[in-house]
Image (cartoon, rainbow, N blue to C red):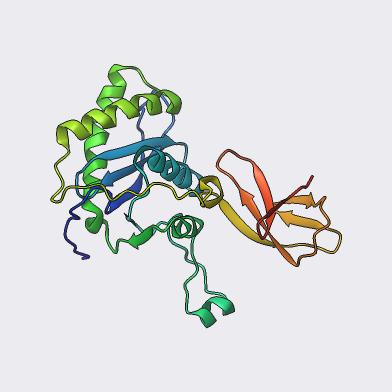
Length: 245
């Protein structure tokens, strides 16, 4: 079993996970609660999504940053969304680095340390939060006849704020270690799915079953395709965004 001491300052570590459950009971479809809990204070943050995956994780983390700032570290499990199980490339082996999931790569760009728990017991605080929410939160939503994600998320903002006031604790040390977003970092460019692709001789790029025709006269062997949280796609070569159809 992995063991560690509770962190002492707000923003020093945030536990994060997704909880699959019939949150709306028989009133609506099952969904996932992406939950966060500050390790030092027990203050929660949460949002519902249709599934647990890279884009929901990136979107929830973006919303967390906008509310609190950038935490020092995130503590989570080894779900494939959060930890890559791919084999290292030859380049990775030469540089002695492990392959990163899109979520790990995004947090690395933001300067956030990602720590993976070795057992469910090691992330007990977020698991206890989910157990409590599966009782109290479900009852509150039942009373309000909430049966869809949009209404549930509108309610969650008020609910988690009141929950933090009632059940949170004072940190062992004063201060907030959350960092503001540096001006040189574009949050949407960090919190997206980035894929390295070959630029063909006819200036086309194949990605996810779609062929993109590059309209700019760029001389490059490889470019980067970005899939953003809002569903948009952007293509970059170094620091230049490329036009395409």
